[in-house]
Length: 326
Image 1 (cartoon, one colour):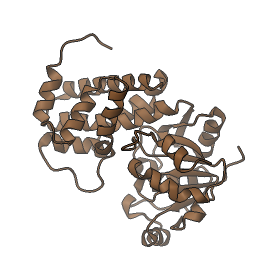
Image 2 (tube, helix red, strand yellow):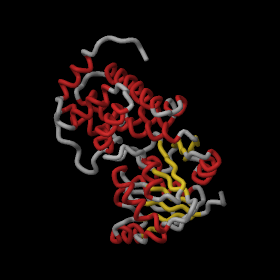
Image 3 (cartoon, helix red, strand yellow):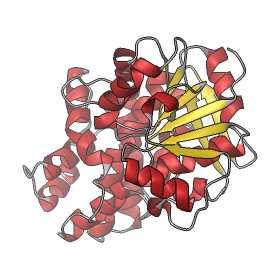
């Protein structure tokens, strides 16, 4: 690949703004695309995104609502919710040159198609090189330059390595891999399992129950990963176990916060809905198609779909037949 001097970020939410800062700190010229012209003008003028209050934009970042200018970068980060990725990349595709890496920065599985994020990119922009960025990270930490490590996956190892060199810095350390599916499964499944962990906390079931839930949840994630061809080291690394542990232990996670509310019998927190709520039903459908047993994820999907109460779900999990460790 040629030298990477410019990066575009599609999506001016908190995570998109944080990743724009990552690219700027790595020495790249950055375009941050906001679909709403008013929102773009506000950020460009004030140099602060209201969705990431208190963080000043790096001078190397230009904010725009012009999709054509955003499409001309050497690398594009697609930072939109999983269920909106296809529309966003389709809108961008006419402006993307052949061979441009488009990196999905969302964690999920597309409804209806059961496609993973790199598969969506490949269909919406066939001329692009799909990649995925995932791992234990929160927008506020990343935006403030706090130490963060993630995983970046592409099918071609040389491309993955090149992208890591282009985005990495002293405080943002991406590891590269060719295990695209492992990274995608880790990111998608952990969102659902974080909801389950939140339910345990909201129900005051104790630290032992939370530890058990987290480990059993990871066992589910690993089973599905193996069935889909993921490598064990990827699932047990940053994009799998690391991401799961972070999301199951802090209220910064929307998925964990949603679970806490469900466990307490409260309404879902206001604001943007947790991605795991969208992913849960698709994840269990995918698991069924692969003949993989995922009881915790299945219980979360049933609770979210109002087919099962929290108490009934807990009882069902605790009364499952005893079995050997997997």
